[in-house]
Amino acid sequence: MDIFLQQIINGLVVGSIYALIALGYTMVYGIMQLINFAHGEIVMIGAMVTITCINLLIGAGINLPGPLLLLAGLLMAIPVSMLLGFAIERIAYRPLRRAPRLAPLITAIGVSIVLQQAAMLIWGRNYRPFPAILPTEVHDFFGAAITDLQVAIVVLALLLMGGLFFLIERTKLGRAMRATSQNPEVAGLMGVNINTIISMTFMIGSALGAMAGVMVAANYDQAHAYMGSLIGLKAFTAAVLGGIGNLAGAVVGGILLGLIESMCAGYLSSSYKDVFAFVVLIGVLVFRPSGLLGERVADRA
Amino acid sequence: MSQTLLQVKDLKVAYGGIHAVKGINLEIKQGELVALIGANGAGKTTTLKTLIGMVKPSDGEIMFNGKSTAKLHAYDYVRHGLVLVPEGRGIFSRLTVEENLQMGAYVRDDKAEVAADLERVYGLFPRLKERYKQLAGTLSGGEQQMVAIGRAMMSRPKLLLLDEPSMGLAPIIVQKIFEIIRMIAAEGVTMLLVEQNAKLALQTANRGYVMESGHVTLADSAANLLANEAIQKAYLGE
Ligand SMILES: Nc1ncnc2c1ncn2[C@@H]1O[C@H](COP(=O)(O)OP(=O)(O)O)[C@@H](O)[C@H]1O
Ligand SMILES: [Mg+2]
Image (cartoon, rainbow over all chains, first blue to last red; front, side, top):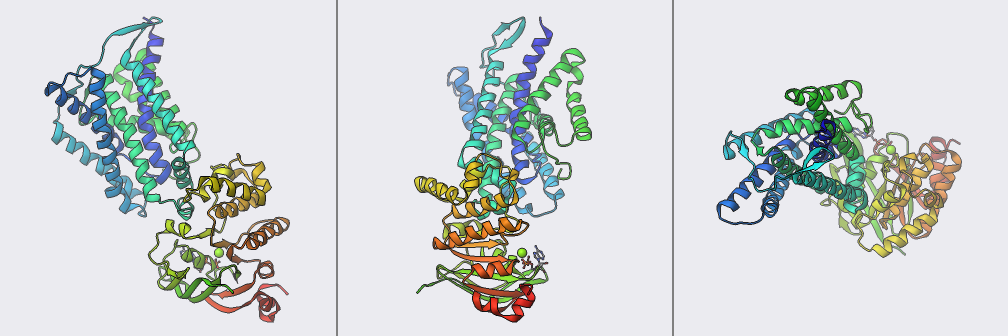
C-alpha cells in the first residue's frame, strides 16, 4: 500500500470538510469581526439531526436507497441548522453589536456550551453510529484505497465552495456582503440592511456547517454531542491558518491542515494527530498571525 | 418657481454630553445648490449625518419632500432619494470601481436603466471607465472621490449631500471635482455642499449657510456671502 498517496487522499477528504466549516467562521468574522465559537455546535447538530432523521425513516420501514435517505436527512438538518444560526445571531450576538469585543466572544463560548448540553439532553452522552446505508466498497487507486464516500465528500465540498464563491463574487447579495464587511456604515447609506446581510451570513455558514457535520459523521461512522468542540477548533485553526476573514484562505487553510494532520498521522503518530492541529494554530499565531492569505489582523483578534 | 425639498427646523444633535448642533434651520428648494461652510468642528458633518439618518437628532424636525424622516431606518433614505458622499469618501476599497458604482444602485431593480446610468457616470468620469476593473483602494485620492460621487449618482438622488469633496486633493483635482459638481447641478440634481474651501463652494453655489460652533449664524445668497466683509475675513482668507 502506498502510504504517501493514502495519506494525501485522507488529508484531502478531511481537509475539504475543515474548509467547509472554516468558511463559516471566516464569513462571520469578515462581516462582524466575531469568532462564532458556537459554529462547531451547528456542525454537530447538523450531523445529529441527519442521523436521527435517517433512523426515523428506517424505523418507519421506508426502504429508500442509502443516498436518498441521506438526502432526506440533509433536507431536514440544513434548515434546522440555518434556523439555529439565525437565532443565535439574533438572540445572543445582535444585542452586543456595540459592546466591547470581549462580551460577544464570551457569549459565543456560552452559546456553544448551552448547545452542547442541550444536544446531550436530546441525544445522550453516547456515540451515535452513523447508519450503515452507504456503499462501503473500497476501490484501488494507484495502490491506495479510496471509497465512494470519500470521493463524494471531496466532490460535494468542492461544488459547495464553488457555489459560495459564485455567490460572493458574482451576485448582488455577495457584493452587498463584501461591501458590508468593508464599510457597514456606507453600505447602509447605499440601502443595504446590514441586519439582513448578517443574518444571511450566519444562515449560509450554518448550511455549509450542517453538510460538513454529516460528512464528518459519515466519514468516521459516528457522531456525538461533544464532537463540535474538536472539529470546530480545528476548522477555526484552518481559518486562522489561511487568514481569518479571507474566503480563499479558509479553503487553503482547511485543505492544508487536513494534509498536515494526515501526514503526521501516517508518518509520525496517529494517536497525536489532534495535537498537530494545535501546534499549527500556535505556530501561526506566533509567527504569522495574519495567516497565509490574510491581511494584518492581530490587532482585531 | 420651485418647491421646498428639504426643511430643517430647530435641529439639535448631541454626542453624549457634547452638543454638536444647537438648533439650526435650513431650507433647500428643488434644483438649488446650497453651500454649508464653517470652521473645523462647527457641526457640518454632524448636520449631514443627521440629515441622512446616521445620527439621531435630540430635538427638531427634518422634512424631506413634505414628509418627516424621523421614522426612517438608515438604509431607507436612499430609496427616498437622499444620499451622502461621506467625508473621507467612504469607498469600498476592495471592491472594483464598477462594483462600487453598482453598490450605488443597490436599491434599484430597473436593470436597463441602471446600465444606462452606469454609462452616464462613465461619461462624467472617463477615468473611471478606464479603470473599471481596478480595486477602488488602488486609485488616487481624486479618482476615489470620483467613485464616491459616481456611486451616489447611481442611486438617482433627489438631494445629494456632499461632505468636503475637496478634502486632501491637489488644487488641480479640486477644480476638476467642482467642474463635475457644476455638471451634476446642471442636470437638475439638488445639492447640499459642505466645504472647508469656502470660496470655491460659494462661487459654485446659489446660496450658502455659515455655521459656527453648532449654530447657523448667516444665511444668504452666495454672491452676498462672497461680498460680506466678515465672511471674507473669517473664511475666504482676504
Ligand atoms: N462621534 C462623535 N462623538 C463625539 N463628539 C463628536 C463626534 N463627532 C463629532 N463630534 C464633535 O462634534 C462637533 C462637531 O463636529 P463635526 O460635525 O464633525 O464638525 P465639522 O464637520 O464642521 O468639522 C465637534 O466638536 C466634534 O468634536
Ligand atoms: Mg466635517
